[in-house]
Image (cartoon, rainbow, N blue to C red; front, top):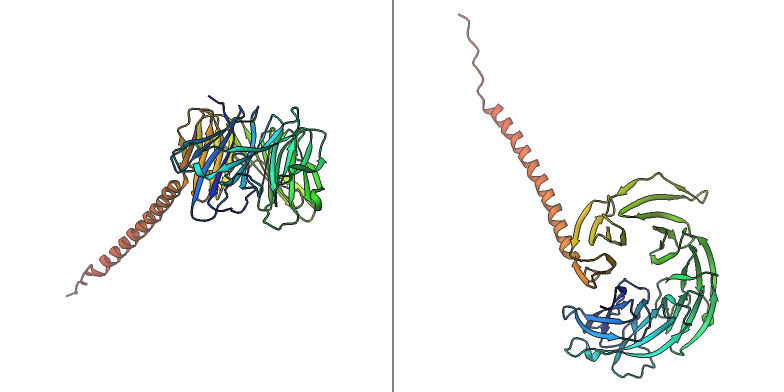
Length: 410
């Protein structure tokens, strides 16, 4: 009764302080792992502003409800506990952003993980950005810093340890809707950041000393609002309200490929770059995939598979190489809104308008594919042996067949 899930995040809390993993965001797995004693908790943010958590090991038992935000939660991240956390039992902290113009930092207490008692977190502090300035998204930086993007078009570098804004960079006169950062480890001096705006532009930034940001470049990426940004290897992936998903080279902002998503039809358009002329030339439409009977809401790439969720309440798995259908998952009673992948467990998590989060076993699908491919190989070998035996049998008949004696003339 709290509303639809607006953000999903998976957090692995450990007995000892673990390494930070600050590059996942809403509807994407974010794990802090290490040690042998690990508890996996799924956190979800709702339109009502409430944050809830479920213990995966206890078959999805509800263990926490965190209240504080006045409007929809836009983004969730988990990280190691803050050094100045007054809670001695805290093992991690949860950071949440909301449309109410605040970022809240929560202390997570391990004592409730895996037990029968309801787990209770506490809000350490709240960062106010203004009631008319919703916070769209944020990313972690080395140390205890986060960079937030908000509707006033500014990127703010916030030090969670000092609980203050270190620097403010005005990116655009329009709202910022999405942000992502390059991978980093402890001791990294410079981090690349990309931000997407309301008018379809993406700008690249790099962190400097004292928390300042320096612009690397910007370009018109879409015809409408940039709603999501992801970094994958050397590619920057952007999603937009113009119903396209585009892949860019993060180094020079050149377009690699484009996926067009229209009501129930997933269109794949291939483009290539002529390196000598540094020009982009589009090839004619190469493939149209009738993926669903309604709007495609959550496409994901996993290994060689393309996973798509839809308003038709189904989740489908495709071979990314030839777009052949591998498997279809049914079970949700409402439109599928978000997909989250747990690579280590090979699990797919889905959130839908029926107010449920379901898990799907990708390991079983892989096993079925292996069995099917193995059966095809065995059938081919059997057919080859059968043809070989027939050929040998014919040859033996010719050898054993007696020749007619020639008639003698008298």
